[in-house]
Image 1 (cartoon, helix red, strand yellow):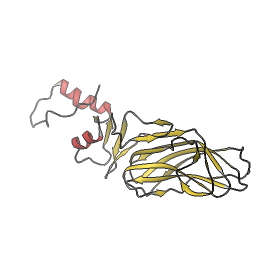
Image 2: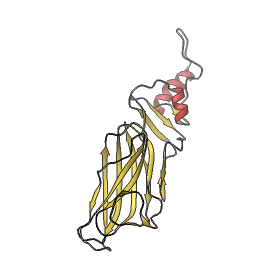
Image 3: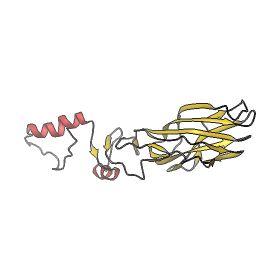
Image 4: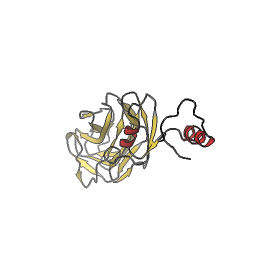
Length: 221
């Protein structure tokens, strides 16, 4: 069973529908859950005036619009999208992980770590004005009472800003003591469209170490 669009045109008054037509256009499409398109461009051309709540599945998302960077990425082969009244939102999670350890001296927010930190995790996807973020890291700090932070910089449709929602406080002051922190949160105030989420790091004392950094983003219609 697969989605079949009404390529032959609209039905006309008085037209007799065959069993095959009813099965193809009514039964099978209802069970399929909505139209299926290869790309976002083809979806937008086929549905020029979507209604709020309309759904469509994309089998081959355009690389520049649904992607991720990192040592290991979870980029879906196909994505579910829903129209929220103003834009199409990707409701399929996209993720990235980098296990390599990077270090940071006293610094304001930055995406650049010293050492051999590998590729910094980032995710690009369609969102509405809100998104669900899943973030985690393992961190340590050589400074007693130091505070290390990992957060997310959002760019793309949204003018660059750091969410300020994920703060890790490290107290032991022993570099070999590592703390694992995991958080899920909803962020608001985004500009709807294609947004880029990039992990950022901050440290106020000593030398911080960040490893096993993970980021997953899911659009919320």
